Image 1 (tube, helix red, strand yellow):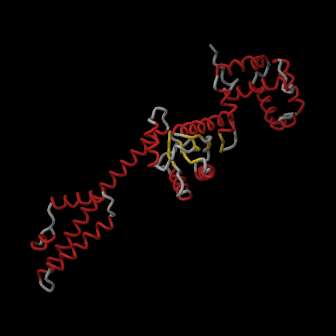
Image 2 (tube, helix red, strand yellow):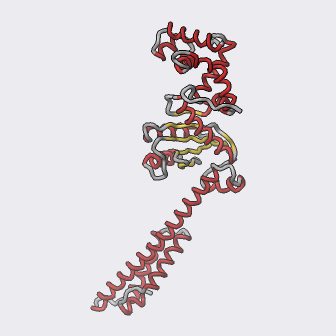
Image 3 (cartoon, one colour):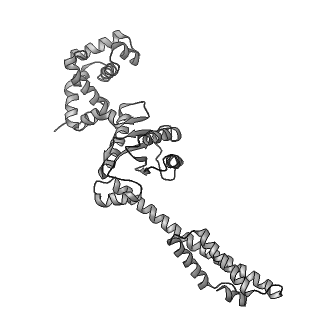
Length: 348
């Protein structure tokens, strides 16, 4: 091709440029580095020039221009073909990654095939994994600054370990082997320091197998939701801290019945049930009347009076060990269902 150019001084034809683009595409698909490809073509140009050019003649100047123009056109065409194949490969890789992520967090995926594909993305699903989830009012996306910063930092620090940093349902998610608990800690620290101010992080428990990742993810998400509903101040919460609440919520109808039966009579007060439920919550949280009084900015006498009112109206005393469990369970349920601000759903 170059010999024909040197013999006539013409530029490369459309077909010749197309063939170079195809050559660039094939090189990319076969894993040839672009640097090696360009070095090969430019080296070939020098060899042909030495064999065919006659230096010192007027024609040589024309041939030099034609030669370098042809080399430039060929290199550009090669790079275009190479880049096209590279972008296609990236899109296919990203599509495959998103498909894998969707299957990883789906209950209907083929477990055998899922385990095979997981190895390609650095996960050994036979091991136990911990899923850590970050959620904020501002959605996390693959291209958002916080997502990219956290992902880059985690990848650099744990380069030799099997981590998966992804976005799922507008949350930022870290999947790490349970043998690397510091990954969850680092992820939480990075998100809370570089992410949105209102960001909250939930840490699931370690679970083994393909479904273990999904289970840990669900726990992490629920721990965030529960922390928000219960008004927890901590930005990082763990699923283990909310196991009792998980149990209480498994039967919402039974919980509603418990609240209505135990705390329902508190509605029969002039101020309504809310102040008395708040007092019970503070008392159970701090363990003493003075502690509850400080939390509520009340006198100890006012707290004692409210606790006595609760006992008189409900028949349950917060200070009686035998009755405390029932009363505290009802108060926890009220916090979870945001009662009495929201009415209970009738059972049956």
